[in-house]
Length: 206
Image (cartoon, rainbow, N blue to C red; front, side, top):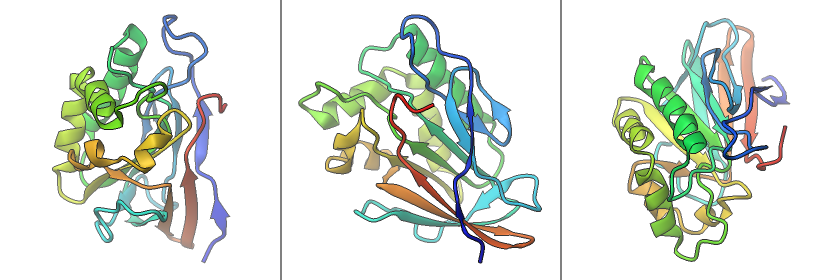
């Protein structure tokens, strides 16, 4: 077994100026979408990474454990910071992730490693989460279609802006999205098994 290692990360250009200083966005299978804070965990010896449905439906207090077989695909994204009132930058970021999900071919896993939504100052966590997703309908629809596919999962790790999801995940669970404090990826490679721990990012992380 290989040692525990962090996924590759990339800092890409900033989002539009209505939210200066925020990094938010997706990447998948080597594809970069400007303005997203993103990282990829790819299986060595294969062009993409591929997930197993074993353990699907995790909503517990421990890390979600996912086995990723050779040839399968994993995308790690962070810091979308969606709020109930959509802005130009949040719509731009959300639509970027939606395009990746729409073009996804076959099984796979998407991990949102912190701050899918921005719940700071919100008293009704469920209503605010639902409103934030509904305010970005292209992404909301893409997530719904993605999790309905065979052997596909979306796991959200709460970050500093949406930490309340750890205690109140129902608005995401109803949409088929899992919530976990961390994700442990067991990546099968030609050289053996590589373990990757994905944890939530803070909004200021580079």
